[in-house]
Length: 390
Image 1 (cartoon, rainbow, N blue to C red):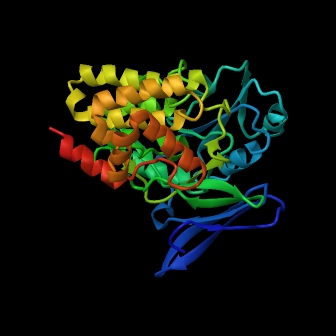
Image 2 (cartoon, helix red, strand yellow; image 1 turned 120 degrees about the vertical axis):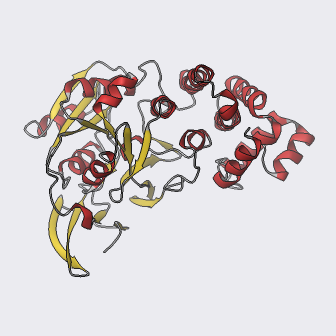
Image 3 (cartoon, one colour; image 1 turned 90 degrees about the vertical axis):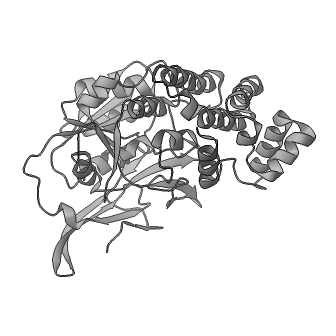
C-alpha cells in the first residue's frame, strides 16, 4: 500500500489504533491504522523512509485550540495521540467554551497539557498554546481537523532539510454526506502548482494550518499569529514568512484532514461574512501591501493581491455588500478588470452589467449550483499573472 487510503463509510465503534510491519519489494514498511471515535473513517498510511528512528528526536508540540468543539475534539486529540513519531506533546487550549469541551480535555489530563482562558479568539489561543509548549517544532491542529498517524514523522523529515524551512503535507477535505464524514480530494492541487508560493497563495492556492510544521525559532521570529485578526490569520503568518525567504518543503508522507461544515469550515465564529471578519481579511491584505512596498516587491505582487481582493469580494457580496464593494474596487485598482475577470464570459458580463452586478450574478449562480463556487482556475490565473509580471 503506497498511498494513504480512506475507507468511505464505517459503522461507529470503539477507537482503534493498530501498527504492523508489511513488506513491499522485500523491504519492511510501517503501516498505521486509526479509526476515529465517530466511526467515520479509516486512515492507513505508510512511508518506507520513516522506518528507523532519527538519531536526534526533537520534541514536536501539537497545539489544539478549541471553542465549543465537543462534537469533534476527541477525534482531533486521538489523531494527535496516535502519531507514529513518539516525541510529541499535545497542548489543548479551551478558548472559553460553554459546551463539554472542558470535560473532554480533562478526561485526557494524563496525556496532554490543558489550558483554559476567557474567549480570546483563534490566533491568541494558538499563541497561548505555543507559550505553554516546549517543542522545538510546532503543528497547529484545529479542534475539528485530523492528521494521519505518520504526519508528524513525515513533516519532521522534510523540515530538517534546511534552515528557515516550513514543511507541508498533502491534505483532504472532510465533508458530510448522508450523515457520514467523507474524505474528498482537496480543492487546491498539491503540491502547489504556482512556482511562486506567495503569488500562488494570493491566487487561492492555500494550504490549511494543520498541514504545516513550523520551527519554533522561526515562528517566534515572525511574531506568531496576529491576535487582532479574526480570519486569514494563517495567511498573514505565511505572507510574513515567505517575504522573509522561508522555504516550503513538501513532505513525502503524511496527510491532514480539513473539515468543512456545510459550505464553511468550523471556526471561532460561524459568521465568516460578519463585518469584523471581512475587515480582518482586508486588514491582512493591507499589512501585506505595506510589506511589499518595504521589500520593493510591489510590482511583482500587485496583480495577485488584486485578484485576492476580488475573490474576497465575490464571497462577501452574499452578506456584506458595502465591504464587498470596497474590496472589489481595490482589486480592480490593483489588478485591472481583465485580471479580476479572466474568462470571456466574465468580461462580457462586465461590459453588459458592470463589475459589481457581474460579481453578484456569479455569486447567486454559484449558490444555486449552476456554476463553480467562484474559486478561480489556478493554472489560468498563474498564466495571467506571469504574462503581466515585469
